[in-house]
Amino acid sequence: MRFRDMSDKEIINVNEGSRLGILGQTDLEINEETGQIESFIISNYKWFGLVKEGEETRIRWDSIKKIGEDMIMIEKNFFE
Image 1: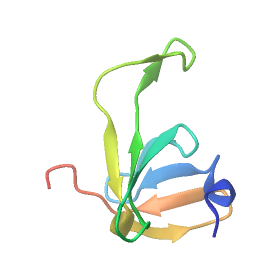
Image 2: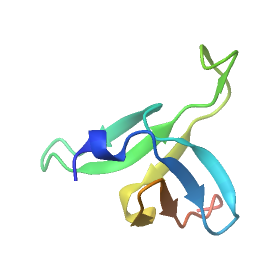
Image 3: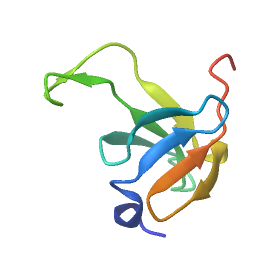
């Protein structure tokens, strides 16, 4: 699957039933040696997506449980 196929999908945390954001408004953390994606970094935005605010949410690739047609479902404990 290509990154462009995953963009614009909503990210849902199944542990908390919360929406974390839309993929496409993210940065990627890539392993320099293997070239594989290690995590997505989602920034919090305000002012209609123009200004970054607060802390970022980091989603490790191994947290992803299912990539569907409209959303990406993850299992993430924020206390890890």
